[in-house]
Amino acid sequence: MAQIFHRSFNVIAKLSIVGAVVVLAILTTVLAAIDRSSYVTRVNVPREQPVPFSHRHHVGQLGIDCRYCHTTAEESRFAGLPPVETCMTCHSQIHKDAAMLEPVRESWRTGKPLQWVRVHDLPEFVYFDHSIHVNKGVGCVTCHGQVDEMPLMWAVNTLRMEWCLQCHRQPERYLRPREEVFNLHWKPTGDQLALGRKLIKEYHIPKERLTDCSVCHR
Image (cartoon, rainbow, N blue to C red; front, side, top):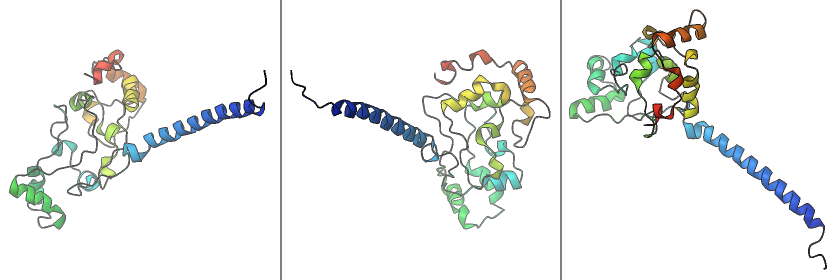
């Protein structure tokens, strides 16, 4: 029987398969890079807010403790956003006529809450409890970064599962004494791993269960 296709088609077929594999690999790499980029994760991208609240000014310069505004971080799933009454405690006297604070004053007058844009927003299928992490010795800066240096708030971590698992697999690398949780500049004076192992026992952290699916997905 006569040959239907020329022998060159064998080469073309092989090149096509190799080319398809290369293109698929390149496409996968590009899509993975885009998925991890700040365009998607919003890491290091300041969020526009109804009022340009500066953590650098309030925390870094004035020394206001995290708990003054985030009052439920130690006892609730949510750290909480401050009501406008908290803002007006100071701003009824300080910068009380500043134009940028008009949304705060309007909220105070009308009783309508400010619509803050969430910077750290987990999917609904993820269970996260602030109080557990705070009371087990996870510092604010571990997840939120140096907020005292941020003129506007941005995320410094993706909050994706792979990032969370870094800590859940090796919590001893990240734990600190409870009294230092809100200290944004705390550094261990000795061996962090030795301290972490000590705190795991002291705070009764079930390390062997931290990677169970049910811990975060309920």
